[in-house]
Image 1 (cartoon, rainbow, N blue to C red):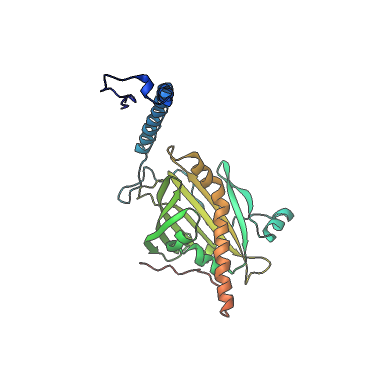
Image 2 (spheres, rainbow, N blue to C red):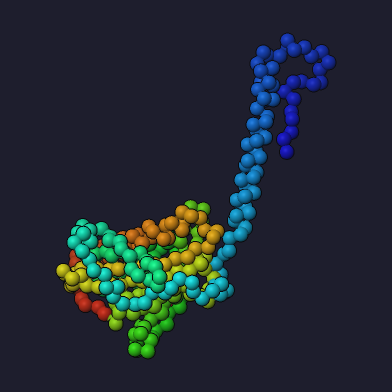
Length: 291
C-alpha cells in the first residue's frame, strides 16, 4: 500500500508559507505529478511477479521414484555404421579440424548428424565418452552426472551384441533453469563400434524424450592415432521449457557434443604420448565399473 505523507508541518497554527524554503512547493508539485507513474510501475512489477510465479508453478519436477509419462516418443537409434559418403568439401572441413554437419534418414524425415575428426586413437575417445561420472567437468551445460546402475550382458546375435547398459542421472543448467533427466545407455562397441541411448522410462525426467547415438571409427588416413566420430541426437521438450533451451538442445548441442569429446580426447592423448605411451587397439573402450 502507498501511504501519503505531508511534507508540510501540520501542528503549527501560526504556519506561514513564507517560512518554508522556496523549493518545498516545487517538491510537493513534482511528487504529486509523478504519483501516477509510480503507481503504473508498481502495477507492472506486481503483474510480472505474479506471472513469473504462475509459470514456475506449472513446471513438473523430475522424480527418481516415479515412472515417466510414456515409454518413448522419439524413434530410437540403431547401432552401426551410418554409411555417410563424404565429398571433397566435407573432407576439407574435417581436415581443418571443424565439425561437418549433414542429415541422415529417419522414418519419414531426417536427423542432424555431426562428424568430427579427433587427433587421438579410438580407445582414448571411448574413454572420454564413457566417463559419465565426470561429464560435469567436460560437457557444456552439464553440472552433474552420476551412474546409478550398470548391467553387463553377454553379446549374442539375439541381443544384437549388446555388451552393457549404463544408467546415468544427468543435470544440465541454463539461466534461471535447471533440468534433470535419466539416461539408459546401450554399449555395442565390440561388434558395432557404437553407443546408443534413450531415457530411462522408469524415472520421470524433465525432458519429454531423448535418444542419441555415437559411432566411433579409426580414421581412414591414420587408424592407429586418429578417430572419426559420428554423433546424432533426437530430443522432445515439454511446452514449459523456454524456446532458447529447445533451440540449444536441437541445434548447438550437436556441435558442442563433438567439440568437447575432441578437446578432452586430444588432451588425454597428449598426456599418454608425453609419458611414452603408444596407440593400442581397443575393441571395448573404457571399462566402466559398477559402483
